[in-house]
Length: 246
Image (spheres, rainbow, N blue to C red):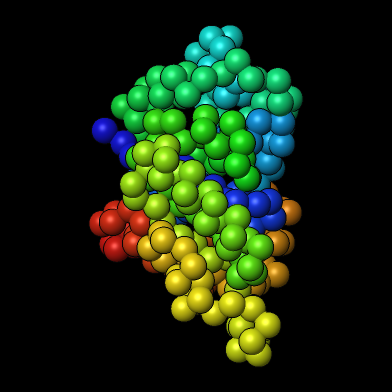
């Protein structure tokens, strides 16, 4: 049986989708079977980050509403051994979808894949409730600024109420010059403000932005410090031994 992670953020612009993409890609590189599901309904981006936007025919809403079978909505990324994506609906008109719909879909995907990664919508609304349904653990992505940390803390409290006991923290877009100059909170401040255990830090790097614009996960290139960092973060979160063997 597979494991399901929901990747979320308290506000937009933290790099949540970028992290979900490279987290899943790193697991797939290690030989795990992975499906990434975009639940940011109305703001579909996961397919763009993989460069697979031209291959989307059916989306997650079609699956949840019974318009198509699961396999029809899965898009294979042939750059990886076993990685698939399921795109979000381009229209946010799915208020009739319930957490029960997601739990049923999650159970079916869990039976077929080692890892299911759900890219949740940012913020606190009904979308996060839907995205968390069926998830085993959560990953909260934050930036090192106080508004992002406050929103992440509110999100974390909501996830506790939704029953997600295990939550991981990833701090993205860290500029050490700003931190050392006292213009951004340091890691001690961040971990003091938030309850989830710190899984890792991703430093500001223009190569990450370039890779997302090109639709190429940055971990596709082996041996870089960014790829090694993502591998370490993925290993801390999942405990996946195949990552250690890489």
